[in-house]
Image 1 (spheres, one colour):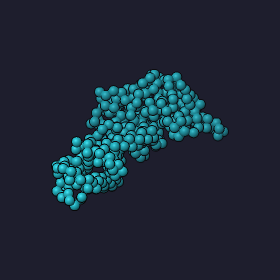
Image 2: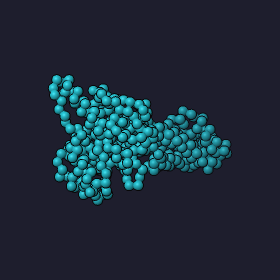
Image 3: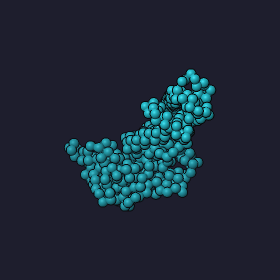
Image 4: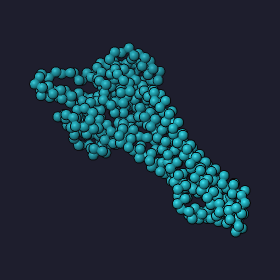
Length: 405
């Protein structure tokens, strides 16, 4: 009966009750988005680097090398001689190497030239292969393509389809004459390579040889072969173990014309560089959260005080002080729980929208499951709101009813 009275009291003032619940919902939604997004970005970036133990590429910015090779988001620094790949392949500390070649795209989706060993590559020993086929087969000869899950979905490609690549990293460049034939579609990997089109390295070399020949012919000069078969953009290196990786990294520092990086370490260093800015953002976020909680608590508190006359009438009609205390507490709990539920769902919806936008832009998948941090936020805010309802309940319990009649 007390709960029914509390609910009817809230319905008797729908605008006031709705505004309080709205304040609570906005506060919770904001806290959920901040909490999930802060952890989701870092987790998504680190997850994307897991298949890449070590990367070798041209001298330059390690960040650019990782952005290009792991995240497919930046132009390559340059190429390295094929001899470096051969030396790594024969190195006793190396378990496997995969050559990678970049420089073309199809409708804005990057084409990645790779050795056929990429389909046997395991991020960690005992794990399934990184790239697994959902349909078709791997490429076995030049100008056969295996398309990432997102690229296949967005472009409408399926085994048997043909397309022509474009030189460069953006759509609208000069097209190549050779046509690729789709022979396989990859399963989703929840990472940037979902939007990649993977072909053999020899396909990239041959396409670029024809491209340079055509450019030279248009310029009226003689074609100069650049031995593309002896160049790769990067090499994915799988060491035999952690100690072997460290020794290999130390040895490679003496190599001229190329650099070796730990992609995961580059991401950690990037976060460290951005650490001060991240700390400022965290402080701002905490201030916003605290202010939101205070506004939420104040709203619940004032809402309870505004019904003092209603409680006095109930006391005059015979309701006990304990009954009034329970009703006030129930009203605050209902407003808080209603706002928390609406805010949690709204915050989740906003986060999924932001995560989906980021995935469409970069193919980096943010975590979408329920997290401990999200649970702490919801539980903490709920308790804080309930506490805000206890204060007016205690005050009303101790107040004489005559002054409100």
